[in-house]
Image (cartoon, rainbow over all chains, first blue to last red; front, side, top):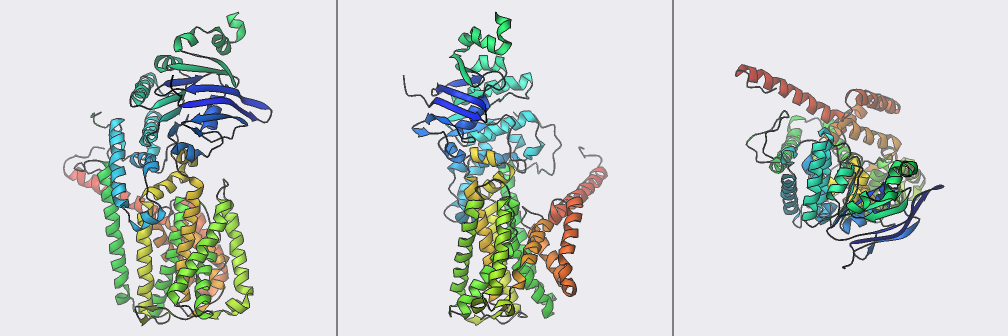
Length: 257
Length: 355
């Protein structure tokens, strides 16, 4: 078996007396859709924050293509090829949809504040190129009609799609999605599921946190279950569905007994 | 995804292929605006022959340079400087001292002042901008106070409160005369033109978008690979550099004289008001702000100690009625008028109006 894309081990984070993530380890293989599930407070989003440098870990490592993610700055982790979307979409509300996606191209741009001011060293051409590329990404995501709209005006479903399009514009190897279906209706959730599968088909590995079980069961190759910050179970959707420990964690131990 | 949008279309030219093309058109329109504006400024001395007004417009130009730099910091990087007059003063005094005391030519002195001021800004910005929150505002407040003390107390270099004489500047062998001179007006406004074009270029490209992005959401900007701390530091250094250039221009012309008063805390606040009043985060906001505030300063000259009261009132009224500043307020008014006009015309043509 080939080297995993992401290997996490011994990840621990405490907030005061509370251990939010306790010695968690897992692997994500290339071209996989892997889901992180667990009851509220299981530490899923905390793990995302630790892996993207938003929070500092107490201990543990996370190797991504030979680079250590734990306690690296967020922008450097992004430059390694990791994209992320948020539970509540963080769009740049003062910009248009097109500009949002153009920011997604940031990592591939070269213009700095001096060359951009003077319009030298091909800055104008680069700008034109990224404008066209961003437009192409929006067309691919079916959002071309929205390009000129202010991001602040969009309803939640479209905000989420724009956020995904923006993350993809950076051409990540791994896309971490925090509850991509939160706040979406059933039709939108189905579309999101299809989009995630299309993203994987494009060669992007997906790691997601999600509460919508039917979505998780439908699209995931592998599921990791956490409970109160600890590893509980890992396996295929079928294995997880039949795992008694998982049922117990979700429903309470008495219900299963 | 070709189904027609159900949303009302606003001002969209149906022949335009897509938003990318429209964005490029807006950029071109902006260039035309800049060109027209500076053509107007070039013709101004033909209409306004009174040398006092030429002097006021020259000062508007200097203020505009500082305000444009401050706008990059406030309107784009989302940080506040409460001591920008200090950088303006640093540029002025560094130029003045290098020329008057060390015999430098004014042009290299201007470069030296620029390097020095930028370096000071970097030293202040680097540690404070790593932290979340408005630590830069605190640090710059301190810098403003220190700069004023130095300008007043380092008498051997600055001449203290009594001020110092400064030499002029030659431009292609032509010695620019003192402050009532229309040549000097053109010289300053040429600088304004160049620096505004550089500013417009900067904000409409990758780093400019990066700044606006981090202003909206630092976290989202970081996960897209933007080094937000470094971006803020660079924006701060550039804004200080703009102030330094304006300061050097001030030193080598105006009255051939420097004193600490024009670079004190009052000026820092006035500069802040220019940016906020005009509309931060826009190209034309600082223009409106610099014109308005400079004229207010001139009008209040007999009661100069009360200017802070006037600024305070202005800011209050503005925050209530035009939180986006004059430029956005005017553009909203314009769109509203244009909308009404369109509706009237639409009815005239037999109800083509879709709304």
